[in-house]
Length: 206
Image (cartoon, rainbow, N blue to C red; front, side, top):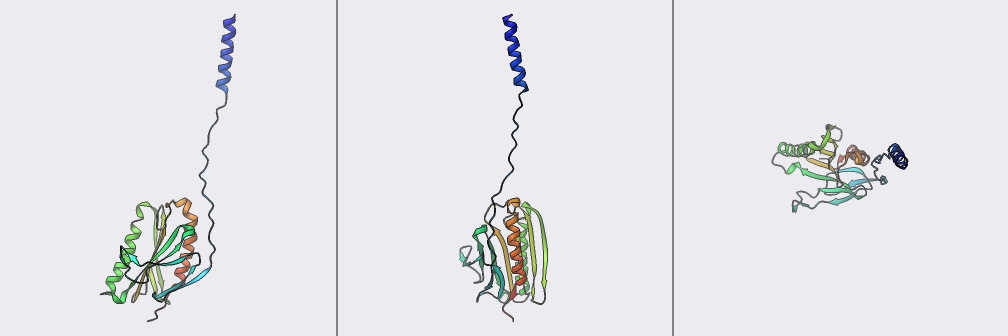
């Protein structure tokens, strides 16, 4: 009789243990830190050693680029507009077409460099679109590359008047290029770069 009671107790315990509801652990969704965007205070870019000007947001700061590959920069008008609050910068390089052996050769190199730099991001890009820049009134021509995905440089631009000047600009971020988390920052900065482009004009009117 005692064995029957013990067996019944054991079976009862097994029954309740087997019927116990197991906890299901659901992974928490990834949370990204809240982004504090800087205030946009319009400023005017104007330097004696640059043949162009434009409007840019005041949260960006000018830094002249004096060295290139451990040598003096090819022109004084090589510079960065840094915005450490968003961990990025816009790099500008200038080519004086008047000092080239042939304008066509220089323009080919400028455009080719831009295409090459844009293509380097293709393996990690989700999409890449290029847009023609054509503003005859200001003599501003060129191409803009909009690159989407896990890339370090989502914006590449070439601007020229086709006779005297050529400028390349590229947006870079120092943080890891995670497209989802960086999307709000990229769109914020792209808006300001488009404003730079729309306000761009040559100060050398020759």
